[in-house]
Image 1 (tube, rainbow, N blue to C red):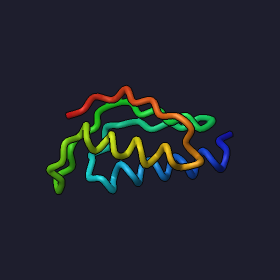
Image 2: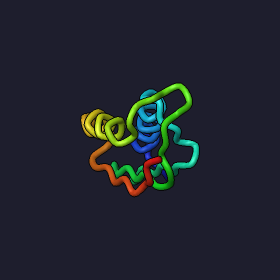
Image 3: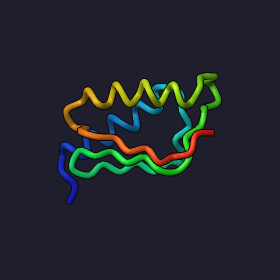
Image 4: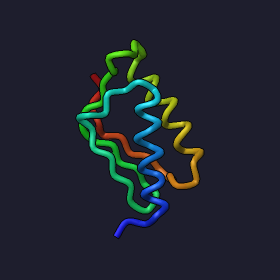
Length: 79
């Protein structure tokens, strides 16, 4: 069963990716014991014209400052 901390951290991660204008519809997010795993395909959303790699770097810094997330592993493709 998933802990409350993992549930909160997963919500934080998904909302942060959406807030930055990234398309996460083809990505899979998992958070286990504080380790966030992002797999699949991350792309630029329709209303955003930002670079995916730079947006992910910003998100990485923001999420690492959250107590629910200890480490981040991104194996997703950027499109």
